[in-house]
Length: 139
Image (tube, rainbow, N blue to C red):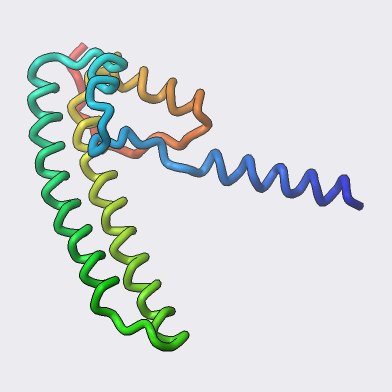
C-alpha cells in the first residue's frame, strides 16, 4: 500500500514538473547568459535590451501596486487577509503573464537554430516550451 502511494506521489511530482513552462526570464539579471546560449546577433541583443527596459517599467509599476496593497489593505480579520491574499495573487499572476509575454516576443525573433536550441534545453529541463507564433523562414 505504501509503495503504491509513493509511486502515485512520484508520478504526480513528475507530471507537475513536466507541466511547468520553460521561460527565459528576460526580466532577470542573466541577459549575458541568454545572449551566449542562444548566440544572439546585434539586432536581437538591441531588441532584448529594449524589451528588458519595457518589462522593468511594467514590473516596477506592479511592484509598487503590491506594496501599496500591503500597506493600505485592511488586515484585521481573517476575511481581510483572505481578500488581501486574493488581490496579491492576482497581481503576482499579472507579473508572470507580462514576463512570459516578453519571453514569447524574444522567442518570436529567434532563427530556426536558436529556437531548436530553446526546445532542446526545455526538454532537458523537463519543461514545456512556450507556444509562439513564429514567422516561417524561407528555405
